[in-house]
Image (cartoon, rainbow, N blue to C red; front, top):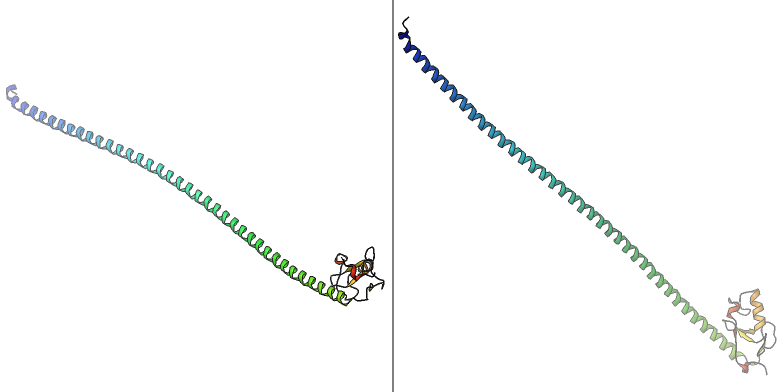
Length: 205
């Protein structure tokens, strides 16, 4: 074969190969560019995820803090409510005690008023009885127990009971030791009820 006759075919083959290589290079370049863009996009996504995770962690931390604060406030409220209930119970107890004391004082005053009324009635009755005895006593100046005259002093001096009846001191005290009642009217009497009578005009001369 003539070498000169093969040059046009070789030139065409080299040109086709060069174009193919250029195309391949462009494809490789496109792949590199696309890969670079893909890597850049992936890095951005990773960065965004990291930011999102950081925000989530901060949110969780704030949420935990808020929950702890809420629990503390609820605990404080429960403590305050418990103290309020204790104070309310204490006040109710104090009010009940004061009411009982007030009622006790009212009852005591009522008893004292009743006793005062009874004492006045007893004194009035005693005074009336004594006046009757003194008014009716003209010549009868003897003790109704021993029938002996009273004395101005000593063991047989003139005494009276709350009912107003008169006796010799020694005689009535002896009688009251045996029976706690007046020998004349049979009303209840006590040695402490014996009273001395001062008045020489009713005693024998």
